[in-house]
Every structure is written in C-alpha cells, then in structure tokens.
Amino acid sequence: MRIREVDFPSTVIEAQRSGQLVLFAGAGVSKDPPSDYPDFEGLAAQVGGAAYPKHDGESVEVYLGRLVSSGIKVHDQVREILSSPNSAPNSNHFALIDLFKNLDCFRLVTTNFDRHFATAMSDRFGIAGPEVYFAPALPVGSGFTGIVNLHGSVDRESYRMVLTDSDFARAYINEGWATRFLERLCSRFVVLFVGYTIRTC
View 1 (cartoon, rainbow, N blue to C red):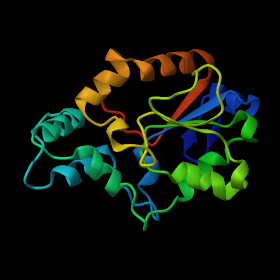
View 2 (view 1 turned 135 degrees about the horizontal axis):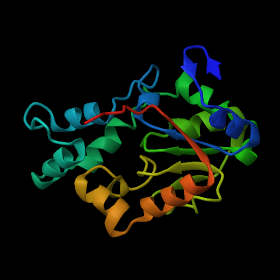
View 3 (view 1 turned 90 degrees about the vertical axis):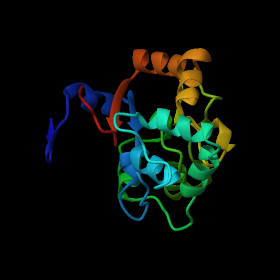
View 4 (view 1 turned 180 degrees about the vertical axis):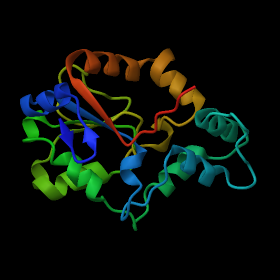
C-alpha cells in the first residue's frame, strides 16, 4: 500500500490493523525541532570535540570506547546532552504513537536515550500511559506492551547506556540481554524500523 511517497508492504499494514506491529525507533526521529537532537554520529562528535577527532573508518562505538580509555566521561556527557530542557517531543513522536489503536497493542522499541516518547505518551494518555522498560531490565520480547529503551535512558544511571564497543559487546554478546529480547521480538511480531540510516558495504 502506497501512503504518500512510501510504499508499505502489506504485512506491515495488516500487522498495524491486527495489533501485531512493533515500531523500532532510532535517532532520526528526534532530529526535527523542537527536539533538535543529533544522530549517533553527531552525538559522538559533540562528545569528542575537536581535541579528539574520529579516525577515518572508525565506527562510532569504537570511537566512543577510545574516548573512555582517554579518560573522557562519555556516558555522563551523553546524558547531559540528551537531557536539554530546551528539547521537546516533535511531530514524529506523536505521529508514531498515533499508529497504535490503543494501549493494549502499543509496542515501541527505541535505541534513543531521550525521554521524548514517554513524554509524548503522557501528553496523549495522561498517567494511564504504557509501561516503560529500561535496559538491561527488559521484558520478554515475544510478549510485552509499552516502551522499551533498549540501549538505556537519560532517566536511569548513565553507565547503563549502550554507547561504546564494550557496552555493545556486553549487551549483545557477553551478557546478551539485548540479543535475547530481539530474537523473541522478531520471532513474534512484525517490526517496522523508523529513523535509522541504512549503510551498505
């Protein structure tokens, strides 16, 4: 089905209608005003600054890990940047929330650290909003409703944020809580990714 300029697969449309859709939201959702937050690359550039430039071909998580090794408090800086009092949910947050018919089928996973989805949900539903989960304390991926902050949140301790190569290794390999969640999620629901950049080799 074509909606404006986007051709949506029929499986996505049917999942939305039947309450089997999960939205997986990335940093692109929070770039537009009044949110005005950077993507992962821009966030890393703010933390490192001109004094610690990223090497050519260096991945963002490896770069942030190098900054930690250099004594920079990466997690604390990211928490401060993404807690700006001047930032607020934008039209993207509200539009994505409105894709769900009711709270019984509301399932949203985000790798963003900001609180904009939770704030937008409170604006829509008041105190009766959905449950919010924060990594590493995640629900079972095959049976949940609510908002899952897969990589942590500014509303929790900064050291829990998944930012560096070591953080990703812990979440997806060593401890594997993110991997277990995603495996069960993808085996049960139709997942629509929004706000991510696809890079090809």
